Amino acid sequence: MLKTVLLLLLAYIAYRFIFGFVIPVARATKSVRQQFKAAQDQMEAQMRAQQGYAQAQQEPVSRPAAKKISKDYIDFEEVE
Image (tube, one colour):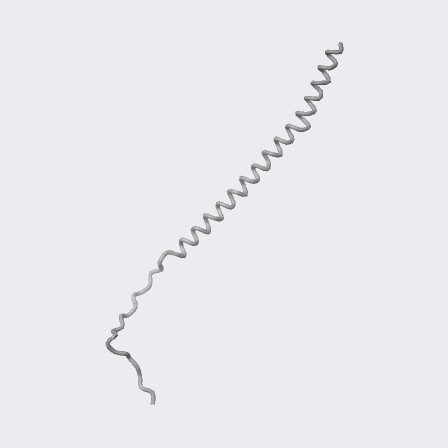
């Protein structure tokens, strides 16, 4: 009889420990990991966007060819 009562008491304590501590901690851990993963994904997306913007800024812009100026003379106007 005492053995049965002790087994029932041990089962009750194990039940309370599992459902009162282990499962809530596991759920909280899962939730925190998901939040960190979402934040990390968002930061990586922002970094990729910034890198794309920086690369777009570094690409040479095609400009019309400038006139070649001969170094033989300097063009000027006389001011009176």
